[in-house]
Image 1: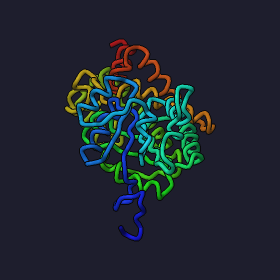
Image 2: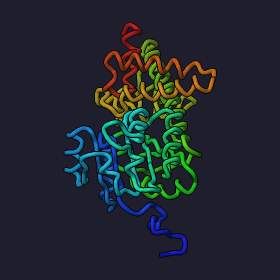
Image 3: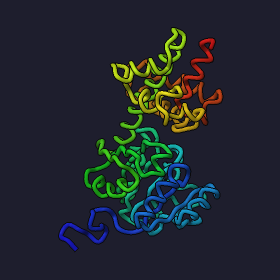
Image 4: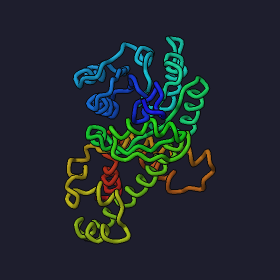
Length: 316
């Protein structure tokens, strides 16, 4: 054992021992599978029986309850739908102990959910007060990135906790960015996705305008992709079929990044805008537009499908 390695850490600095992975859905399941493939001992739990069955088929051991999963864990990784789910899981309910009570002292709680910044900070405060360590690390890259191990992690943590958890994140992703203290990972994600939502609406409106003016999709793409209109929403996730063959527009807008998820992330951005008093206009409008898109049939379509809504409302 080296002078800098403690009994609770491996040679890389990461916590040694079992990882409890709670939330084995479309994102969490593949992420957990990649950790197992890398040789980590993992116990998973999900409230959906089908998710547990799929996890077991990928070699992931499962527990009957969340408390059982975390009982001997060095790391508790959560991928849950909302901040309320996370805080309820940490605190526990009348039906059983919370994760913070069930986990051994000094457990590293790593939350990869996408939630409100204030909720992330509250979760970290609860974990630290209970004698644990806390990291928020929301992800970008979708199901494809989760399966391929190419996610981007935006991390909020103390420097030493970031270094401890980085080896695990590098198994599941190709880019890991330390954004600051507790809650900073969530802050970075919602800021980024507000940019993405606004830019996809702008790109889609431009293509519909181009159609009205007689431009072909390819002509507009060739100009904008090499000019000042260049952006990820255009060159990677192009909302019209043809110019970018790998974009969801070529698969009838199968996600990808679903409209419901963009609506959720923009709502989180809207909450942050309101709580900080930022005089934003485009972010709130984008949130309203994607809320309507999701409610009117776009929830399960790729968020670039917003162009079809713009086109329909433009009299095409």
